[in-house]
Length: 83
Image (cartoon, helix red, strand yellow):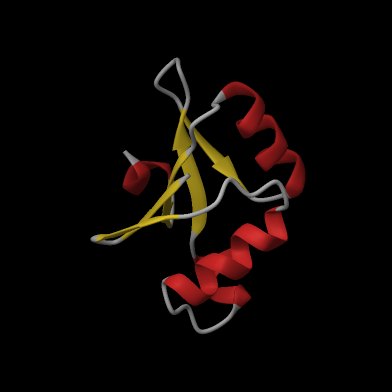
């Protein structure tokens, strides 16, 4: 799994738990707290149809892993930034 925030890209394990993903990103990208990551910015990925999809929960992560075996996530504020 790759996660991109601003101009920084990190390779991370293929997390199955949303909380693990959040915690690893808090550390890797030096976020101040989970509110900053959860409310001000979110995870997004592009699906096979070219749509930008957000991941904000365990269910979203599970669905993303089903449709996209190799996830590439972007951390940003909204769909427009994710493009």
